[in-house]
Length: 272
Image 1: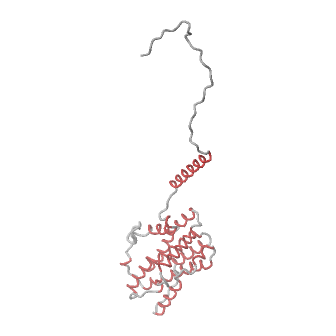
Image 2: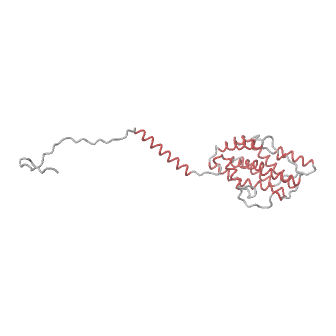
């Protein structure tokens, strides 16, 4: 316990305070250059902006694999449910297996198809736009094979009909389109050749079994590996589309439905 020492009368009650200079407390800071802080802040801003942009960007089905995959996705959606597992359209009319084609109707289909292929191949040969020249001599061309097939039918005693409105209308449409709208034209180019190499071959086989004793026409033969020919054209289309804006790509995709409409009218000639 502290002692209770009496306060002497001679001793003042309060001591005069000793004046002196107070030292500022020393605060410890981490040593980091200002430039480093600025750089770190900039990186954080860039990362945040990039993340926000990625979240806001619309991803298109198939876009990661290239534009042709986007085209394929849209085309598959326009197939009927019995034509493709990705198809969304309800079947109309009888399935191909139950078709009752005639030689006369099949010849109309071949004649109109030839007019369309003649037109497509002339357009890329002329190349009004530089990108069209990419698709010369792809190995997918069908005009020469169709000419041989029509000559064979003629030798069998069949009369070759004149082109009809479905083929004429489609040929005129792609001709006009090619002069002013490359993305839309190449949509028709893609769908015409690729559809023939897939569903078109299946239809050709079924029709041949019913009315041609199984004969395989030149229309359904390609020189070389078809899968590689198709891949080469896919690569070319993807390269061309790299120079398109998103709006041009969307415009190309929107043309798919018209392509199906025109080609469907020609296909129905088989049953005429």
